[in-house]
Length: 191
Image (cartoon, rainbow, N blue to C red):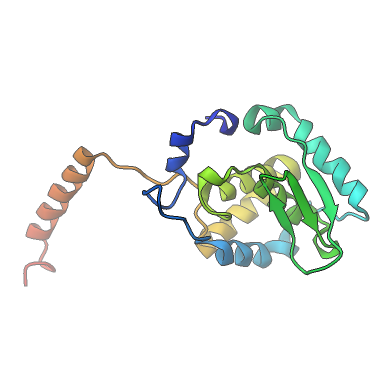
């Protein structure tokens, strides 16, 4: 399903919570940072940049690709050179990414670009949908090999990147019945 065509209700499949009134915390931020840090030197195509203008050209080119626009729609993301502070930042509502000089490489640029194109309705700044978006960007922009390295690091560090499994009441009932039968037959549960 194309993200640009998602209806707000469909975003629930990506959120880590069920009730609209609860604000989701950034449940896997540290896991995502740890996963990236662990593989930063293992990425074969992690291009480095010398200027903000060079990054802006790269982001503009990425956002103009047919696969990008068919997946996420048309975006014009502004790249801002962040001269103070030590963290990089991507903003969906303002459609910009702020990057200090240490972050001038493809991995961080794509991390922040994923933030800039991930709607808040998907839940969590580093939620499942953001992680899936980041992985897809790495695969398309960097390489399949880098995608595999990042995906394996996500798995190792417990970063969730697929839709949350939703079960019908009928399926849940079948699973409960099955577990009841397993417990009745198992010596572990019958002591």
